Image 1 (cartoon, rainbow, N blue to C red):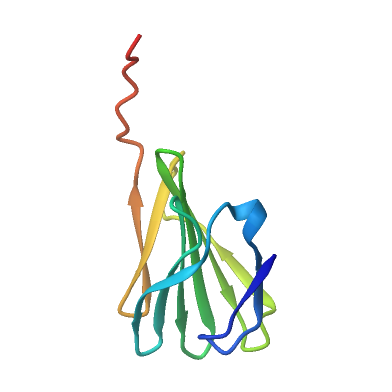
Image 2: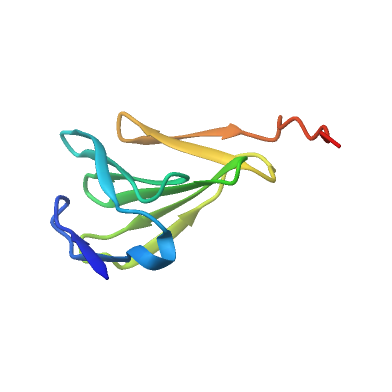
Length: 111
């Protein structure tokens, strides 16, 4: 089963079985949209002269990937954080990407 997300003007097909959930828009304001793809994955989209997309997955530690596309959804550039991190966390704020080093996870064992 597939769902078509048309709210951003793009036919984005998402395979619900492989994602394990039903995508839903959780925030939308102007050129910005945040979509929950599953309980543990989100996609942020900001449309300006180009399209900024941030995918974040949590399992349980969150990590993000950011990319810039042109209006035809051709990949222009993959964005990297300005620091070295195992778990870089990105969000879109006011049309700009904000990176956070998310390596402060507590790795204590419960055994």
